[in-house]
Structure formats: C-alpha cells, structure tokens
Length: 182
Ligand SMILES: [Fe+2]
Ligand SMILES: [Fe+2]
Image 1 (tube, protein in one colour):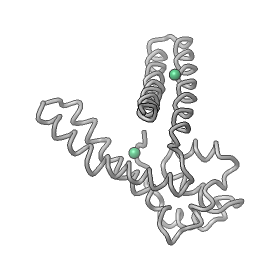
Image 2 (cartoon, rainbow, N blue to C red):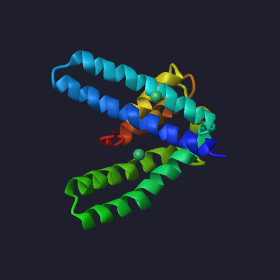
Image 3 (spheres, helix red, strand yellow):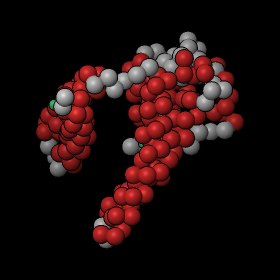
C-alpha cells in the first residue's frame, strides 16, 4: 500500500513549498514587489494547511508526550548522525556553502534537543500533562516556533501566568540561552 509513503512525500513537499514560498516572499520584498510577496505568503499559508492535513492523515501527531519523544528522536538524529555525515560529504566535495550551512544547523539542532528534552524529564511531569497553559494553543505553538525556550515557559503551569510560576524563578536565576532558532 503506497498511501502511507505518498502521505509522507506529500507532507514533505508541502512543507518545503511553505518554506520556499516564504523565502520567495522575502526576496520579493527586497526586490520591491510587495504584492508578489503577499501572494507568496498567502500560498505558503495554504501549503501549511495541506501539510498539516497530510500529517494528521498519516497519524503523525500524537499526544504531547509522544510528540516530545518524536521531536527528541528527530533532533538527536540530526545532530548525531545526519549532519555529521552531510558535513563530511560536503567537505569531500569542496562545497563550502553546504559545509557552513550544515555545521550551523548541526550546532542548533543540538541546542534544540536540549530544549525539548528538558521539559520531558520524568521529574517534571506537570509540563507534559499540562502542556498549554497559555491563552490558547495557537499562541503556545507560535511561541514554540519563534523562540525555542518559550515553550518551556508556556508549559509551566496551567492557568497561571509565567511571572508567578516556578519557571519564572528558574528563568531569573538561570536565563535560558537564545540561539538563532530557524
Ligand atoms: Fe499544496
Ligand atoms: Fe531542530
């Protein structure tokens, strides 16, 4: 049955189209075509809808504990296996831009792994069982995408503001690093 593989391929294609169109939109802004930039951004948003639909259809979204585990495994694979191999092959080919891009990503994936693994520790089960105490799931997801450490803050306690949560004290005494998350 090829459907599961087709869903994976379609999810990958739609996801790539989303990121590519956003890059195209940025370039259109630089080139002085704001209308074309808006067009690209609108189509990119539609590609995200398609990608998420494919992901749901192939049952690629679990509960938060499962999603954290999947993310940990994905980030670990990237920094421990994928990017080291890619760096080596790019160096062999003398592809300097790829070497630089792969190395930069490798370093950040390791940081992502740390951020995601931290709220997954068994000593902090509340963060997993109550993952979205922010005003809405959308805001939590947005914060996750924008700055990696913020999801940890959002996941502190349901119904409590971050400023009053134990995580605020942690953040004051040990500020979370802010890597250049993509
Ligand atoms: Fe699409
Ligand atoms: Fe990552």
